Length: 445
Length: 80
Image 1 (tube, rainbow over the protein chains, first blue to last red):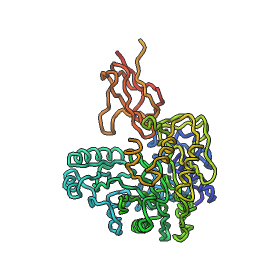
Image 2: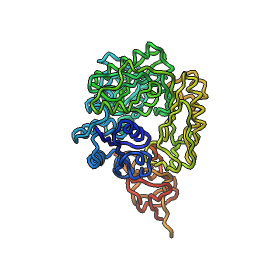
Image 3: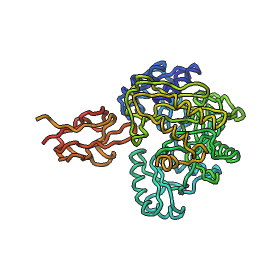
Image 4: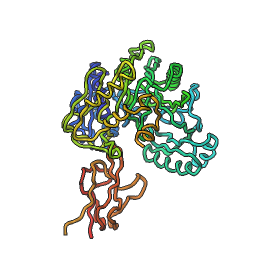
């Protein structure tokens, strides 16, 4: 493996360029015509324009991406997160075209991509799952299934994930309406209207386990990340370790995640997501078969470079670390800074960045692709930077986060920096007592 | 008489329909009143309604479905 085409954009594309650099691999960037001035394009060794601004013409354009790989002589493809990263068909097509896929096998992507089937795999691996339907259900079976579970229930898209295609139902009337809405949304968003139902766990915490696997049968975990600060089911602030679970729960969850990864024949980086209730019972919800946005948290507390491990695994090498080498230290927090105005109902704020001052100093990491004078295109997501801080303990992480957020000046656009500062000052957050509805229902209410 | 137009307030991707398999909000030749929704613009994965500021009849759309638009770009011409 010598040249990697990065089938993505923004901060994650830059992240992969950096890992390639450190491993002596050539990096090929792709870009839509709206991203001609993007940083990942400038920093890569080569860059190829793959289409017009809409994602489906460019970053989702499998034919253009593969052609770009052949044209540049790339022999591997790293899909980043989002876009085609969990598209088994694209992964398979890359492999058929002689390109190494930097990620798990198409079979593993498929196994975990069907969320209802993934639940079943977890159950068979002896991992607790949220009580729910064994597979997908049709509208006529839904009322009986929901009554059997007991309301309230959550309706979820089997082909979905990432917090999309979900409805809550507290009675049969809501269930019927929710089933219709969710199926329609799932069809539009994922091309698959199939649904399943789970019991709704009120005020859950979202705690996920990072795993790594290689082609030599090694599967290890790298502990947990807590991702319960969410706005409309999208993560905003994450931390590691989780303040919600004790040592025993932590170990049991990590062991469960490894069991699931092994059962799926998993290689490369992945994340096993769980819901934890207020009695520290944990339940598998889904597995993400890609590198995640919040992976820097794990890198900060373990000192391990997850993207480099992905590249090693893709090259057929064993992971450079064993489970015994994974020794977490300290406390990390990540602030997803979006180009949205928290004072105007989070209205997106595209436009030109006029003034920019980056934070720095001890325990501060910034993953971003913005620069002074850069114009944020409106066609992609609103994430402009991930500010990650590390401290010896949670208190130091919070103080460092506050200090770094205050140093971070972005002029010309509105951002969620003020919201992060508000969260750090929030009493519930400071006590580590929050859940997935905390931001929407308490802080923003 | 200068032609009246409907402008898209935000940059992004323009859609004629509320969802892929639904009918378009309005068709050419259709009458609209000020405030009627004539399309959507997707910006950073958020969808915003585009409303006509005037009464009139949709003469023609100036931007195709799922094309990129800029802020304040004319997306439809009105007559009458």
